[in-house]
Length: 154
Ligand code: DQA
Image (cartoon, rainbow, N blue to C red; front, side):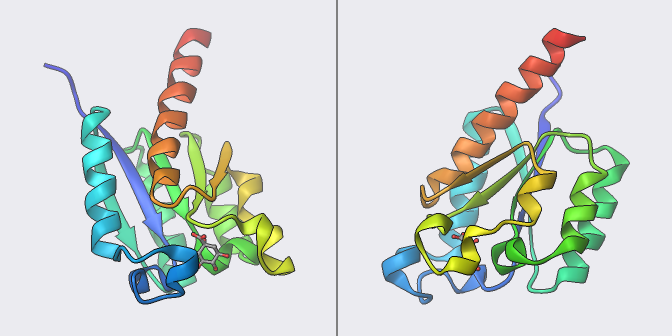
C-alpha cells in the first residue's frame, strides 16, 4: 500500500486575520479558507497537509525543530513579517534537509522597501510569491519536482 507523504505547512503572524486584513492586498478569503485550500490541493497531489500557525517566533522555531524527526516529505512556510528579520527561523530551516519552500500571498517585491528583503529565503530551496492561495499549490508542485530530482540523483 502506498504511504501518504506528509507536508508541514507553517503560517506565521497575522495570517489568521485573512479576510479582514488589508483585503486589497490579501483578498477576502479567510484563514479557514486557506487551510481548506491547502488540505484539498495537497490531497489532489497525494499529500497529507499538516497545518501549523503561530504568531510567535519561538513557537515556529520549536515546530521546525520538532520536524527534524523526519516525519515530513517537505515544508512550506509563510513566515509572514518574520520573513524580513528572523535569523532564528532562518537557522531552524537551515538544519532541515527536506525540500523547503517559502511562500507569500502578496508580491513582497512590489510593496514597502523592507518587504523586498527576505532573511528566511536563504535557507529555503525556492521562494514563491504574489499568487494568493495558489502560491501554496505552486509550492507543493515545487516540492514534488525537487523530490523527483533527488530520487533521480540517488
Ligand atoms: C506575507 C508578506 C509579509 O511581508 C507580511 O508581513 C505578511 C504576509 C504574504 O503572505 O504576502 O504578513 O508573508
